[in-house]
Image (tube, rainbow, N blue to C red):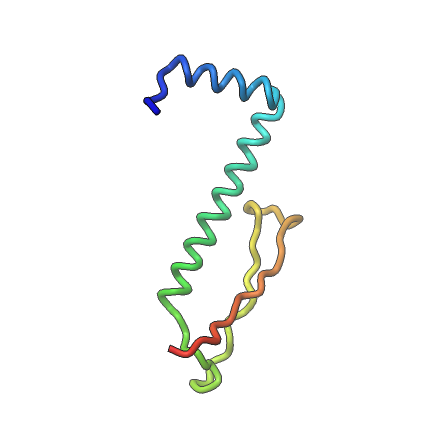
Length: 93
């Protein structure tokens, strides 16, 4: 497999426009951007959770379990918000 030249890229773009239509492409790009933002925010939240990981048994230290988080599709978009149940770590280390 060689590298894609400008001719091949133009041909691929023409095929994509013919398949999906010019009207749907902006919507597809918008939803792809929303998905990327969600993925980025969730990855950041997971990194923060790993940095401040709690002990396996929170009742032993007297701490309460963390509150339930809500994932939003886009800032201000409350129609697609849903609560998320965090998995509990039951393995002993």
